[in-house]
Amino acid sequence: MKPDREINLKGEECPMPFVRSKLALEEMELGQVLRIIVDYPPAVKNVPKSLEIQGDTVLSVKKLNDTDWEILVKKTYDTED
Image (tube, rainbow, N blue to C red):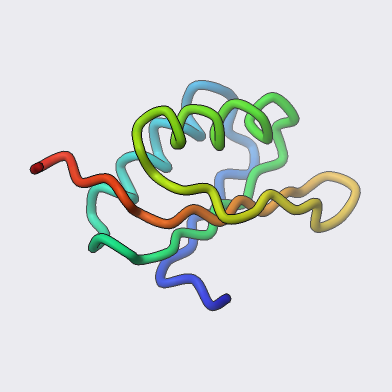
């Protein structure tokens, strides 16, 4: 799946990966996919969990290498609703 947007959050510690992911999703259209790259281990669990709680759909969480993870999330929640 080709993402509509990508953000690289390597070097960011919680809660910033979630905050920056949420802000990026707010700028996107419903149905678009955001690719998030993180290297902070707690973010691998916290970001997907928090985005699903807010109403978006986590499509996958995948380890890219020894330090980096990819989180694909589909915007399914609109704050303007």
